[in-house]
Image (cartoon, rainbow, N blue to C red):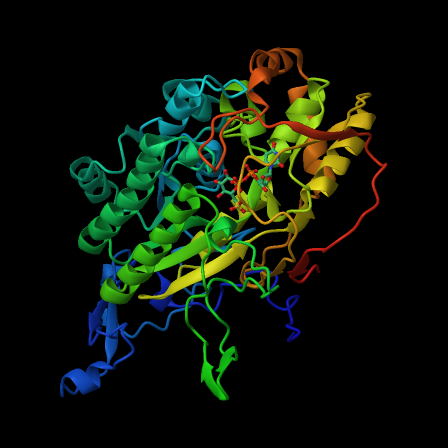
Length: 513
Ligand code: USQ
């Protein structure tokens, strides 16, 4: 691997970016790049190659070449995440969710002007499955009030389905966001595997929601950067051990076949989704990729690892500011579920061999990554992918770590292997490349043990413990990928620390310093 000088660009990594990247710049001149790879010169014989811009924020500058850097421009100011547009207008789609709410508070506190939409799909889906967020969350109205009172920030909220294009159009026209973060999707693999109705609803919401948004962006805010949440599950876990590059093959990758060679550089890497939900994310990827090509939209597709945790300074600032936390089979992610099970004195539910390796990132780190992406907008027409991950962990090891932290809280736990309800590779290598976020100055702040400790601290509070207890019957999975509706059987129960480590180890290419 090429060693890069990460220290040099650790701070203010985006200082040399120019108006070219700035969402406030309106492009003028010969601005047709032909995303198909053919230059416009071939298509037409028109002479002028110059690209000029007008700045929406500084109209007094008139037309000029896009050469002013973020460091030079008074509209960009220093923050601990790099230069950020002053009072940047950011719209969060899915602002009521686990991530949306957390990001909204952090950005608002940084001085951004936050708007957001949500139709409470997540609350409704969780309720439909008979569960609730075990960390109590108040209504959006109460959340907004608390944000004002405790953090002194105002958030512009509209209740709306992302697929309601009329309403969304109006809101986009009014807010004119300079970045859009798209979280408005149904984020559950098991939910998408319940039956045809649920699979269709997940794909309808996720795929058509994104597609409609892209058409609106083209018409209303074509310079705005779109930060779209993808997922590692789009890639699958290649049994060949081929590394998971950041969505696009590096320039020196080659395909060899039949004594011939071709460059793969710049092409999308293969996707091999692992549920109908993950398929919806792959479709989203292709739609965003095409939109960038046809209309020069700018986008980051964020292949995010599995999130765990409860903490940012803002959500911890008051009980009405807390973000949700699910533990049921559908919406609880693996680490979050393991901790809740342990607190209930129940064995940790590892599916299958437990040798599956997955990419992970703590909530607080994930939020920081999103801010850094917002602060470094892509160029017009740039579709880029980042792998957002801070650690690769085997499920068995995660169970051991949760058990170890539990001990510090005086809780002894057991680990149980359950018949795997999913169809997924249970023994596989995993090698992941993740250097783009570090290039934007990101360094992980939160270790696995630290965040698990914070989860224990919060979830062992009596009110929350009681809420977990009320839903503990939803720990054992009943939704299988084969379509059979049955509870997974227990294959084995064992004491933590009694198993030898074996098999593959995840390899993460990411600078640590
Ligand atoms: N698993 C267990 N025990 C459990 C729950 C899950 O062993 O009690 C296993 C699963 O079989 C799987 C792994 O843990 O191998 C991860 O499962 P998960 O439910 O935590 O995560 P997943 O279904 O992959 O989906 C979650 C989010 C989704 C996001 C994705 C990131 O719900 O929105 O896209 O994490 S990733 O998995 O990297 O694609």
